[in-house]
Amino acid sequence: MRLAFTFAVCLGAVTCLAAQEAERRHSLFGCSENAVQVGVEKRPALGVVLLNQAPADAVEFQSAHHFVFHGASPFDDVKIYFSATLPESGVGRGSAATLGIYAETHSGPDGQTGQSQWWKIEPAGATHRGANDDSSASLKFDATRIGGCFEAQGECKFADVALATSDPDVAMVAIKFGENLGGANAENWTEASLLLDFRSSPPRVLATADCGYNEGGGACTAFDSGEMSRSELRCDWIGEERDFLCSEISSPAGQGHRDFFLLRDKAAPLRVSEMASLADAIQEFRRKGKTKPITVRGFGPVTWIDEVQTGPDGKVIVLSSHAFFYFVPETAGKFGTTVQVRPHAVLQEDKSADTGPFTSTDSDRWTLEEGPTAYSKRIYEGKGLIVLQVVAKALPDSQQLYWIGVSDQNEVDVVQLVGGSDYAGCGQFHGPAEVVAVGKIERPFAAEVRLQPATRSGEDSEDLAWDRSDDAPDAVECIRPGRIVWAEGKFRGTMKDSACGRAEKPKYVHVENDGRIMVTEKLIR
Image 1: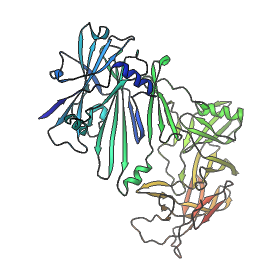
Image 2: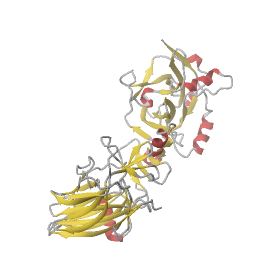
Image 3: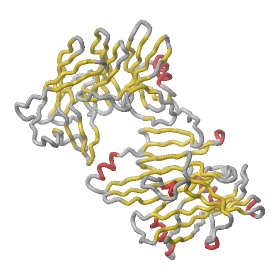
Image 4: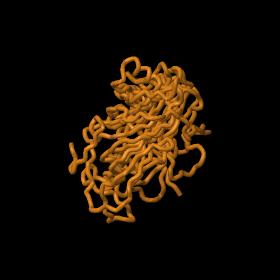
């Protein structure tokens, strides 16, 4: 048996709501700051059902959220009501209630004339919530919010509701509610938004947004939570487009963004100094110079690396961004299919899943706002192969060194010699084997190198230690000789597996802008 409680809380008359909307910079539909996950559904699993009569418990409603529309809508008067249903079990941290959303509509001015109709928002499809269902689809919210309804001075509000736009003639309403997901050593919660459209009959749920939040509390979850990328979602009504222009923005702002129209698949307008494609960026480089990065939507700052001739009439333009290198073939002034390559480590030869032809035309990809400064030069030109060296410098202590291979058979590859650490959880970072010295480069391409095996470090790159395997936790490690060759269209690295004569401590590896490698006992800041 389930118990149903029905309440309604008035947020004020429509004039008060209009004033609130005038003060709000963005629509209620969206995500607050510091969301670790943002999901927008343009085909939500929610429907609006016409009721044959007013809900049986409608007499219990004390007041409603009242909206009067003056624009093109079959409804002149809309009232939104909320109810809550919760299980008989006790309500505590992580308990969820089900939100009931009702709408009463009138077709006459100010609700004085015309027929009254009742509608209910209901999940479409399965009635039982799956483990991974979004809060918006299940209409679940934090059950502890109900407690205030039984207190004399308590706050009784299950959800926030307001006009979705600053224009009262646009018959759309936004609803926002949250769910506490609990957690042992961390706080986890969601924030769900619904966009209700009363511009036609029956009304519709146009879109939903689900935002996930996390705050670490344990020894490891605090570190892990701090490493999560965070953002917020802002949506603004653009009258001439009859659509919301939404922007997911990094938290803190300034790291990245993605822009998209909410109701249509139309591409969002470009931001200032933003190019639409890599091809446009190449033309801009050729017009204005190649020394400064150009921001490309869906990529971020893109740097010109080189232009390699691959045949009598063909060439490949090499570009770089924060995480990828891009190879754009050009023949007789026409660009071919771009190949994107994620660099691989010296001792890793398998291709990344996101390496290959780049054909995406999505206009809402994430665009970084900051990127590394890149210094490049050719270090090898032989029969059928050119090797470029690139130093990417984001911070004084985060230089990264790459070799790029481009063959006359249009084979391309990128190997990372220095840098490339990944977060390994619980405040620890894993660093792959790195090159600490490069010897003479031979023909065909082969280079004798000195390799430092994989390492691990703490949050501030300190406490550098060997990243030993579980099978050999006490193994003696040292810097070893190795070799990098170009074979079958790839860089292939090997490290001699001979035993170390004596134990060594791992070194901090640094790269100068000209590609020179230095090793130090202590971290240089």
